[in-house]
Image (cartoon, rainbow, N blue to C red; front, side):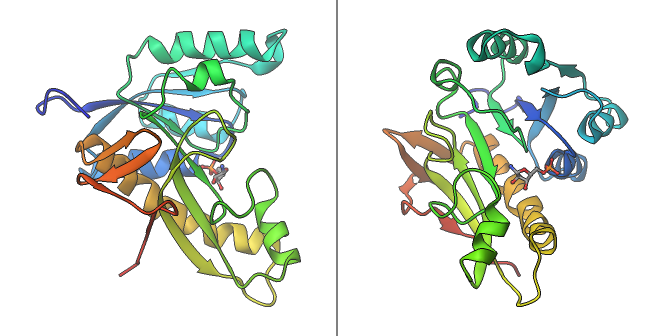
Length: 221
Ligand code: GRF
């Protein structure tokens, strides 16, 4: 929760690639529907489109290239140093494709969120869309969740679903899911910035009410 209601929440966003989710936060800030300020963008990869998006939006960006560190611990230590420079109220993983160590994650429990392109607990990990198609599922989707040391295992906050069409490829389905990601992720960030979202003893509270372990379900108008 943000202690001083006058102050906008400071947000640090971690990316690894295209940054379309990052863009949805930039757009939400510009539209005045996110009461936060993106203080910095950090990428573990150079030359990715997300870094260009940050530059265009005049957001300071940093590259912490995991390839230049001897161990995961050493990378996470440097990553935390850069994140902590901004004293963020909220850390957002937006397509950040590195597994984070428990000692990194534990610094941010309750103030770090991630989006995963499946309806968790189904399909944690990679290749979610192909796995859903191969399993002949009829529904796919995305989940915004608090981050805990368990990979894609933190408590869900908000889920959105999309249909899987007969002719779907992973690419087609991925684009459909990405479209709903861009809707639900800024909503959750805004709830957090407004102090409406808290994590207590691994349970999510929205407006003071404990939510179901699957998270809330997004309903598009
Ligand atoms: C999204 O599908 C997100 O759920 C997953 O990686 C993708 C990132 O896309 N973790 P982008 O970089 O935000 O465009």
